Image (cartoon, rainbow, N blue to C red; front, side):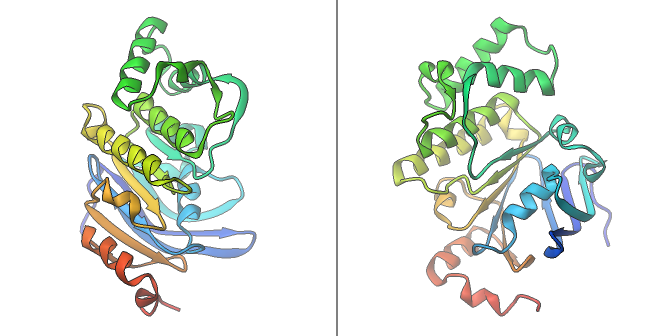
Length: 256
């Protein structure tokens, strides 16, 4: 096999067992800096299991190899994986009443980059990113996801992404449950982050069931996962094919 470049998120023969059941059955996948990879598949195919395997779910038995810019990711604890530059956007973000958005984002930035920005500069950065994403300043004073609509929760995750500026971002079903206006706003937010000075260097893995989000963020490569395996890979036209034909036409490619 040709030697891999150290730069990038490189996944090789990744396997995962949950409660004794094998969910991931040998995943090979790359996420390159500044590029967008999409991972599509029907419900129950193992897409979210892959996301949680990368970030270190404590109940998952994971084997194989994952390297982040040459560093052994699986050898790190979840907090150290985040500090190494890995970000996960949750499908169902939790609400934390009593914790204001601005305080949460400041604590998250401090945890990953202690002391890199004094409070005044952090506030300026936060306001800049909120303006970039079309988020009202009043957002800062609200409690984290408390009473938020589905679209607001996803926009907040985009704001977290912008503030933390990770090396690699895994977006798990970011389009789940959104109406068309919220979907467009989130898609445009991802596109804006990709085009920003900090976001240009970020590699994205967008995990999705439907190709709707890919109308607003054109992927460089599309992988299709069925039954814990990647059964085919292509460019963005593959997503259009799935929209027309569904996943059934690809199921015969899955290894039993």
